[in-house]
Image (cartoon, rainbow, N blue to C red; front, top):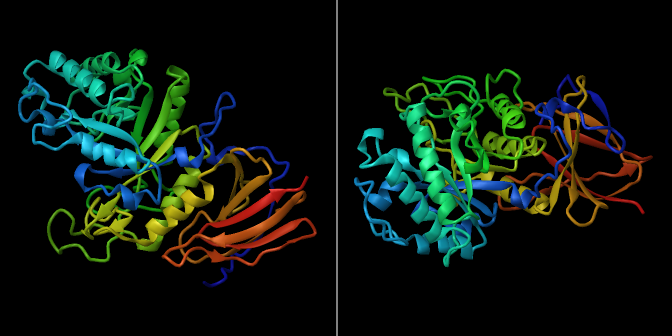
Length: 446
């Protein structure tokens, strides 16, 4: 790691500084309780392929892509036989195993596997499916294996009118089937609907039928043909955090009581080159180290916003060099560097919640503070450079009133985090910071 000529000394006063909002553009109108990280971090899995015993090391929230046509086949009016799908997958076994390993399941009900004109009776079939699913698997049911549902994933082929029609009827069925189950929208954005999202305006006026506004967001610098992605803090990104902030603002103005979840974000990291021809010939992925760094840093950034949950995409891949083909934190169920980084984040901050971020315009490092759920004397500061590459900066943190218990660098393999030799001298903590987060475990003095 070379020391950049841009090396600077940064003074960050964490003890007394107010929250500065560059990383919290969608500032809360009132003070709200931030979620603990164990209730914040999630992962996208997929039905029978997800291995809860493995991924239980990285989080306790799992989102499933639940295809409606597995349950009904081609006939949307098929008499459901839950817990069995029509293709005989036993959802009690699938979701029950996840629950046994401590997971809370969010089932994304992918009705879009049926074209809009393929329903036998759209309003009636949607209502009955939602009701039957909720009363069979919801928190009030005997099985109690699904806590939340999403009505659709990315139903871009549905018109806004058709989506609202499905949403309203399926949500009414879910509410009747189990009033305790939380309901989320499909992937929504502010503005017009697109190929992979619906406009949030599709659910305006239906606030009694949903609890969560759901968004997918990727750090895409370019779309087809490269699908080039950048680091999460990159100011050149046309969307990513901007889309999330816009949805938060819409929520504050039109549905203030609702939660916002980011249910997809991630980076592809393949060891292979794409094929020289075809749709993905010019596809550009990222390195495995970048994937690990940027997933962790995205969680740290999202923690500053009024986002209640964040699910990374994806759980596993087979090293395919194309869009979404290498987004897993495992490859053929073998951990990648991102697996170890995310598992460490979960262990280090699981019992902590975001407290504050201090970020002056002339500073090029970020330092976030997290406080323990039951012991306010226990604090973690996480510091990193919001860039890519091999830059290094020296950060001087005012640490009056704190004792430093330990410091460690985010791990990238199974050897665990690397100890960082730091000391508080004259109430100052000096850290050499780069693009890999450093965790400082402190305790407030009595």
